[in-house]
Image (cartoon, rainbow, N blue to C red; front, side):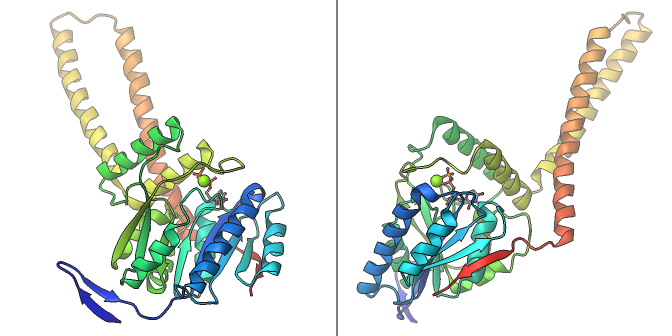
Length: 328
Ligand code: UDP
Ligand code: MG
């Protein structure tokens, strides 16, 4: 590695051509699979011919327990090309675990994760490799804007990311799971043994030199989103509970506030009683019972969410099982 010193950064320029794995988690992606495999194969072949990556680079498809014929299409593609490999999980475990399953079998110098619908611009793959050669261990794919999202998705994502940053969580804006990791960054990521997995929140915790490439995200070409509202909410809860305990502190603050308001109310009630102004206060009693029970239940729910996470972590269950693996 040579050192190239620019005005404010020292780049450790890499000289050896890397081997690359492109990791693609797939859940019921039969409708987009052919398009995906052809486009990615073209990129791999082109990068090999221009000596940007080694000949033994490949695409690794992870079938996350699909119910359609995604796996048989992966087998067929692997039979036709040395640049295609596959991994089949024993059942559907969700995008994050499918991704970590793929990452855990990677042996190449670099890996790039991307969704099967190729909404993320595949031209960035080459730019990511270029940034890797400049000495970066992590290269984030960043969306320029969210215009290809529905209004609802855009709004909920904005609320989620701004509340995460208000809670002090350092996340890379407009970045999902399209990124390059060097071998050592990947090894560092795999040191995180937690069940409560929110990969995009863990990557900034790794450190190492990183860079960003920007692109415009297209709409899904076929099939429907595999992230319905239920899964999106699940991912958001994983994200919050994985990265911050601020919600627990907020509950504490809310408790203090309620105590303070109750204290004022007690003074008022006592004054009213001793000055003979006490009246039958059905409305206020009922409202406060409903309100305080709501606050208490919500608070218990948040605390329960964290206790549930502790419970799952203590079991140290294996995150996934590999059913089949096709290698070159
Ligand atoms: N995915 C997965 N397991 C799941 C759900 C999704 O492996 O349980 C994969 C899916 O096949 C795709 C990626 O995760 O490659 C992202 O899903 P999608 O494109 O549907 O999400 P969106 O872009 O709508 O957020
Ligand atoms: Mg998508």
